[in-house]
Structure formats: structure tokens, C-alpha cells
Length: 223
Image (tube, rainbow, N blue to C red; front, side, top):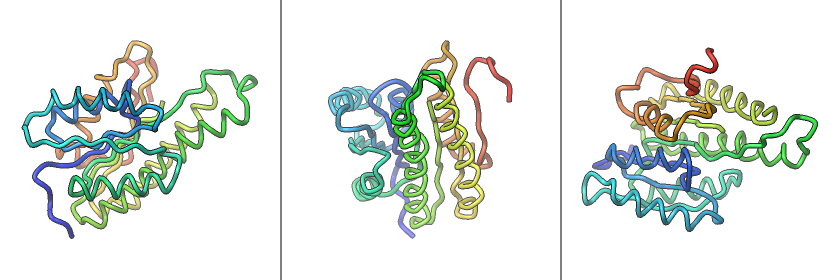
């Protein structure tokens, strides 16, 4: 069992822009030591986010690091978790936000587009869940895992994430790791709308919430 660091540590994948960036800014302002992730092609954007996060630090010694990785690549995900644990002292919250969208009808969606979407949205979330949970179990102090997935192909990956979240919640609840899947699809929503919910879900106040899906869409859909 590892010692708890002075501040909790969170990873936000897909943090270079949009919802991921909004979540990262919020968690930095909440006082987390933070690892921000995206693919190599977005490295410049990650550097911009790093500068923004530095301005939101609530304490001077609060740490923010960049970890470049493709969430659909198992080795890169494992290395990302190992790097964060080594550099920041552990892992308390995984926000698996990285995702892509294919805004096409089924008949216009190619098999390659389908495979890419499922690889990133479903497989990528699975890998982030798996290796984050492995690290949290090793630490022995619990943790939080939040999934935020992004037309017909997208819906399939979204429900894959939902089922994965519920199964993982049952498996890892005994280790104090709670699960939450959030979906933001409303056109009037903002990254801050999602970030506010994620901020709550990774807090101690949400310890009794696990395996649930919350739709943030301004009430367009009721589930």
C-alpha cells in the first residue's frame, strides 16, 4: 500500500481541447495534481493547456504534467499510467475523456471509420479503465474512474462504455474504486457543464455513486 500524496492525482485524457480541456481546468482549480493527455498530433495544444492550467493552480507547488499517448494503444496507456504514478506519486482519478465522433448515417459510415471510432472510444476507454484500476488497486486507497464518451456508430461505442462502466463498478467496488460514465451531447452545452459534474464525481462527496450514466444535454433526453 502506497502513501497518499499531499494532493490527489488525476489524469484527463483527450485534454488538448473541448470538454477535456474544460475538465482539466476545473480539476486544477479544485487542487488536483494533474496529468493531461492527448495524441502527439495535439502536443502544441497540450502545451497551451499547460500554460492555462498553471494560471489556475491554487497552490504554487501544485504539479501539472503532460503525458502524450494514444489511448487505443495498450502499451502507451500502460506507460502513461506508470509515468503518472512515478512522477506524481500515484493515481486517484482517471477521467477517460478521449474520443472521436463520426457524424454520418449508418449507410454513409465506412468500416474503417467504424473501426477507428470503436478503437478509440470503446477500446481506449477499456484500456484506461483497466490500467487505472490496476494502479489504484496496487495503491490500496481507492479512487475514481469517470468515462466521458462523445450518429449511429457513436451510439454503439457510447453504450459499450456504459456497459463497461457498470461491469467495472461491480468488479472494483470492493477496492474502493467507484465508476461513473458521463455523456455530453447537447448542442447548447459547454465543457464547463461537464467539468462541473466530473469535479463532483471525483470528489469524496461522490463516494456512494458508482456504475451510473448521467446525460448532460439540457433535458433533451430523459433516461
